[in-house]
Image 1 (cartoon, rainbow, N blue to C red):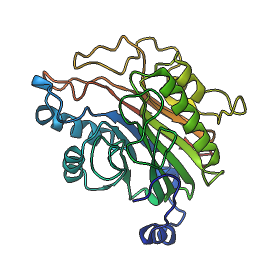
Image 2 (image 1 turned 30 degrees about the vertical axis):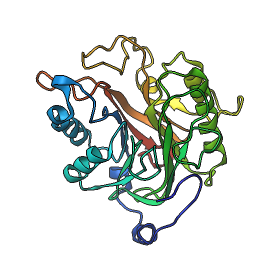
Image 3 (image 1 turned 135 degrees about the vertical axis):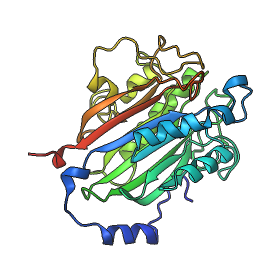
Length: 298
């Protein structure tokens, strides 16, 4: 598995390129995306312990059937359980503590029937982004982003996806993380790629770090990302995504799916369902359905 900006074109990716052909594109073109902080599975959450709510997490994912799924706070054993329940996905990412399996992941799960994986990796939000476990910006917890470059088998487009989890305490860390993420998007190979950014930003819509991401293209290094939820529901006022296992949605929206130029939003929302007496996680999942503009029906 690659880290930093290293790129690997796998045999499977080449086979994906060779097997792609145009046809029936309009039926497949919408891309379903889900971002979900699933809460780390060793937390002492009482009635909401992982083994009590695991099935609700899996059911949420199955119901949305995303082509691209970003999870935050996932530990290795949780990802193993998701893999057994959702075998159609390829998992990308590493544990943040050692760059292998230790610590939380910001993993990307890719539906390989829709996307071929061309390259992928992880970077650390620090002055040494290729060094596992590194942190320098006032955060006491290691923070990472997982990225992938994908081939859309339905449209032939290439897509770069970033799944991120920013710090919950340090505002300087969040702002420097925003700057690094934008620099990565601008500097990574594939200038013509469509871009998606998923994550738990620990920053609401008014936070300067989050606002850096959604500045109009060309302004102070911005890349033209927009919040898919706001594209679908610009006037919503009850938008909180951290529920604390209480179902509360009155705080700010800190989880988001952002899209770059070239995407049209068919729909987006926050999954606030309760599963019996339980909430699936202490965050609500957020979802979006997007369509590459060039692939829209005429």
